[in-house]
Image (cartoon, rainbow, N blue to C red; front, side, top):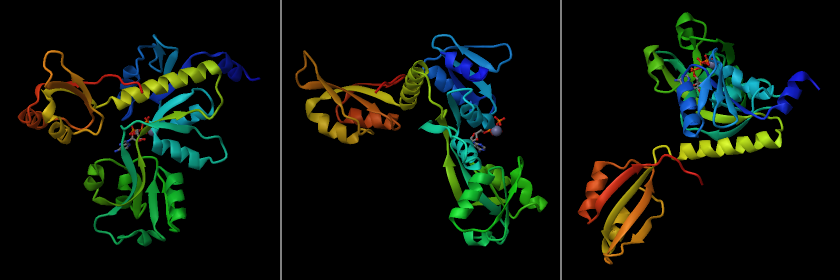
Length: 303
Ligand code: ATP
Ligand code: ZN
């Protein structure tokens, strides 16, 4: 047994890899904090020691996260689906990390974009053309399934200037607002994949202790995430106004309706609302007879 493997089997702390600095870093660490993890930074800022749970955080480049999971250096990672799927398709022979849950941030799409004043107007027009990308496996797979014979040109940065440099006729790159494309006189032709940050799991079997930690942390992450943007609306109203109030609520969740001891015609209502609950909603509810309206942020939820 290699020393590495022996170390792992003796390990009783869960390791989760997150992006050290970039678009996903802040939201990833914030999510872990909201999942209840408090951590202390090591001197080199590569490792955060979990102080209140047996969980440590590795701070790495996002591209390294799938490899760390495959090599079993850590059990969980927070990474863009684009990075995870690219590495899975690029090395189909090796065990692949599994996507456990989507996190609702880091949203973007991998899209093929073409010059504004060019001749490419449809997917068919891509045949025989060169497409520059940092995602050769995802693009190659997409082209194959659509029977488009285009040449994939691998570029590791500044993909969006490839057409102007004459290196490619089109690009395939990550887009969120589209501002970078517009600034380079490019527009989207088609979406290759939709991506967001996800929790990924190592493909290796875990000890019972680590498996229990994984379940616990993932349950908390799901809870922290599902409480994101959720509000608890509380109000009192005449019992007779309840049907009209229910119709107006921006929520399909079941209501809790409580009787009030000293006012038999009134009820107290509580309901979770995940949609925007604005002043106008409250004013309309008030017009229907509701009073004592209160909107509270929901910090934690455990199903
Ligand atoms: P690293 O130094 O860790 O390698 P990076 O430059 O590769 O960083 P970032 O630009 O920070 O990575 O992007 C990280 C992830 O954020 C992407 O893989 C993607 O999942 C997501 N993302 C969301 N919107 C965008 C966007 N507009 N452009 C690029 N990535 C985006
Ligand atoms: Zn990267």
